[in-house]
Length: 173
Ligand code: SME
Image 1 (cartoon, helix red, strand yellow):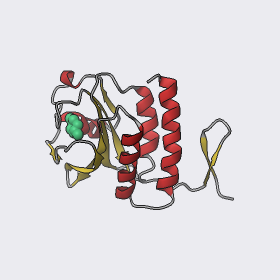
Image 2 (cartoon, helix red, strand yellow):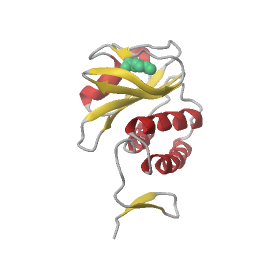
Image 3 (cartoon, helix red, strand yellow):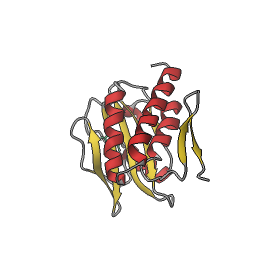
Image 4 (cartoon, helix red, strand yellow):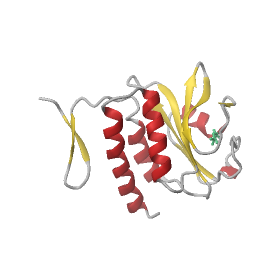
């Protein structure tokens, strides 16, 4: 998918997810909604889900796709790397990532991003796998970062749709 097409697809999904996630729900139900929407609207997403950081372990949370590892070995793999670096991790080819945890041998490329609460503490990791190499880049990182911000954030204002399809946070009067 061309990057411009991918970005506009993500913008539409963000708008849809904002409708679904900002009016109601808990962080867990929002994660479930985000995983379902992303997985079914992005054809190349093979595994889409969250690992929850609970008592120092990354345990699988809401997801879509084949059965995944329940608990990830500490300080190993792409999800822990996102926690330790406190940033997104893009892996173009998992066979070149030392310590990659393979829950399904069909996964070939991957992106992970930390999910933070309002105080900035990492609460979970969004993990997306594809069956082809080099399926994720900086557009995925930028747009998925916005999407995961919906898990814990309550908008203070009203979101309005600009003519060019961007959303801005309009402060309440
Ligand atoms: N590959 C991940 C493990 C989770 S699965 O991809 C669903 C990792 O290395 O942390």
